[in-house]
Image (cartoon, rainbow, N blue to C red):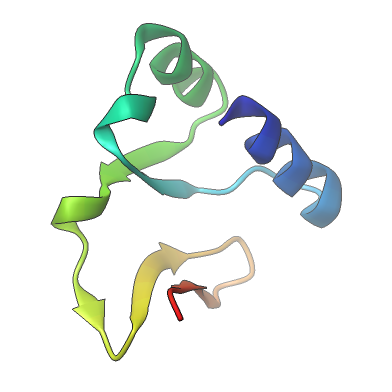
Amino acid sequence: MQKQVENYRNRFGFYPEMLVTDKIYGNRNNRAYLKEHGIITTNIASVTLLNGNIGLGVGHDGKILRLWLK
């Protein structure tokens, strides 16, 4: 997970504000890493599925970020 977050930062120039993860990613190392970078996380089970997308929250530019599940 940390590699993917760093890839995101390299691509967009900033860390994501939020991640949607499975429980398996909630280990101590990952939680410390996310806290260090100010990233909040939520479990996939607590996110509402609408028309095949998951809303991930608002990005640094004010746009809503989405993960397409198709």
